[in-house]
Every structure is written in structure tokens, then in C-alpha cells.
Picture 1 (cartoon, one colour):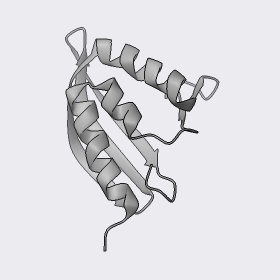
Picture 2 (cartoon, helix red, strand yellow):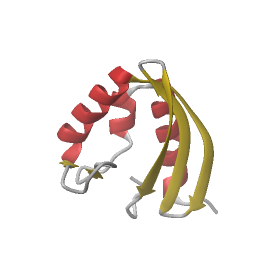
Picture 3 (cartoon, rainbow, N blue to C red):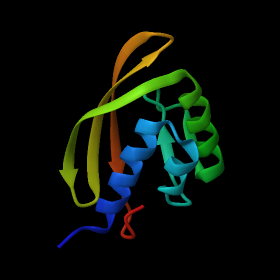
Picture 4 (cartoon, rainbow, N blue to C red):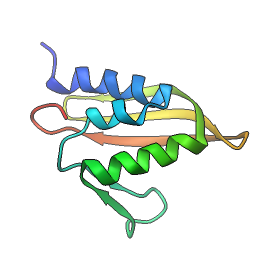
Length: 102
């Protein structure tokens, strides 16, 4: 038996690895919230704000390659390598899905 989030997790990974903000946004629930990795003071709420943030991020974050994916059910974590202006970076994303898998 698969969890509703399984398909979304696959689509999310494909979207971020291709830098496709529209495809990434399509994976999200309407009430999505993204908390900045720098400080919890910065939050992006709803599809419009998060979609704009993703589009801006993918303009500078390049060559995203997921190297580890862990979790099951409604909680997953993705770890990936990427680059910004030629400088390598590693990032982690914690994904929490609703009952519909978004």
C-alpha cells in the first residue's frame, strides 16, 4: 500500500532537480507554509508567496541533485547538493504532507 504523499514526493523531487518552480508549486497544498532556513522570522504563506519564492530561488540555485531521501508517510526529508554562483552548497528540506498527500 502506498501513501498519498508518495506520488507528491516523486513529483517534488523532479521539480526541484529541474528548477521548475511551477511544477514544484503544483505539488503544494493551498495553505502551504515555508519557514526560512535562516530564521523563523521569515515565512512564506500560500501558493502565490511560495511560488514567487521558489521562482526567485531557482534563478540562483542551480544543479540541484538530491542525494538522500528519508522518511515515510506524511513526513520526508530531502538532502541535496546544488550551487549558487558556482559555489557548492548542501541543503536539507523537511516536507510535511497533509492527508491528501500535498
